[in-house]
Length: 51
Image (cartoon, rainbow, N blue to C red; front, side):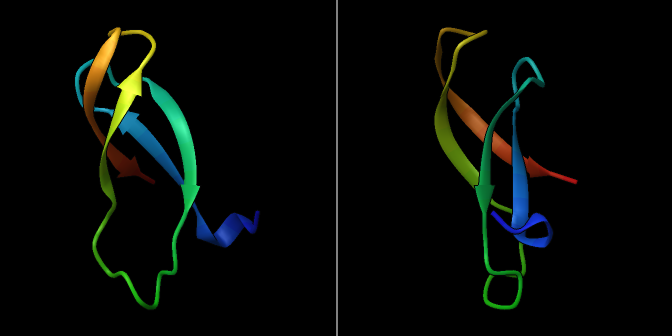
């Protein structure tokens, strides 16, 4: 994966970084927000993109 397109997804509940994804920064201007499973919370929570 290219480092400049890499996005860290952080859990909004426990603030743990659980997933890494990539996005096209030219096509998608806003930050990603996906509903993913968090191993620390043991439930599906919203994960937001961090810096």
